[in-house]
Image 1 (cartoon, rainbow, N blue to C red):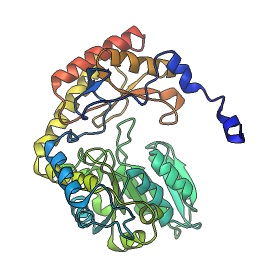
Image 2 (cartoon, helix red, strand yellow):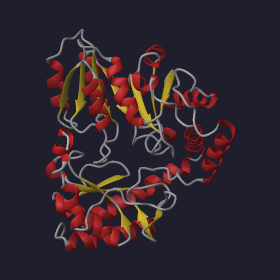
Image 3 (cartoon, rainbow, N blue to C red):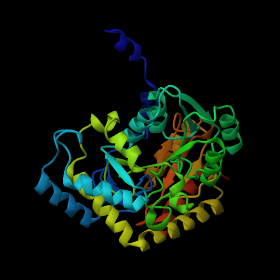
Length: 395
């Protein structure tokens, strides 16, 4: 046995929870993603998805994906930089840039690779990158890969952010990177205050709109649009794997910044292109979101309904302002037990444990789609109330 195998042979934490029959990960779904999915031979309510617009099973998107397969084949067999650029890649970039409100845009094969590649490409050893404590793992990894000096501030604590900025050279390049919507807790970045500090301390700002697009702003343009600050934010990142019913991601900014990234960002240059089907799917989802405002309106109607239901039932849901509703458990084993018992009651939710949250903040994540009904929310809240009471989490 080699050194690496010797190191990992004692790693049995997952098996501990498997033996308890409460292991909550890699559960197999045998149907399309929707408000109900088939698992283990029966249907369960899906409240563990990021498909906020509810478009993943939309036949119009499926048809466009099939058309792209027929026309372009299953893949591009290369990177965008070389042989892997299709006309629909270029079309998607142009339409995303216009939709977001920036001069230009690059589309990547995954959302993770946007943050992982863009942050280190932008910064050098004399620069600074400043992140919120609860930024997504992709931002954390992008920050780690950068040669820049790395700093962070307490979650949504603007006094702490200012404390960090006060110590930095005024003339230095300083990039604040923040989630628009925090993916586990559902709260929003304090973007107006961040922009004030940007001007006061001569910074640049990058916002990750992964969970904001399709939810906030005019036609779902995101948190930057929601606050009317698109022009003030230097770089806007987003993903296609949530509201846009596909997989991939983008970075949107001014022409010169995108021109530089197009020729220097390693995760863009050295990654294979997004598949034709994924690209066509994202493009069609973008069209649907812009043409069906009632979809986002219903998402907010059912979100407000669910928030009131959970609050009335006595759940601790934190500071969420979005369709992401954290139901705090604050105990690791009970978090897994809640997920298992909820599944037995016909409700799919997600366990959130470290490193996705602080050890004292374990929770189950309940997320809504535009296609959920109030009746489905009622069924889920009733089931979860029983489970939380049985486990003595709420009274």
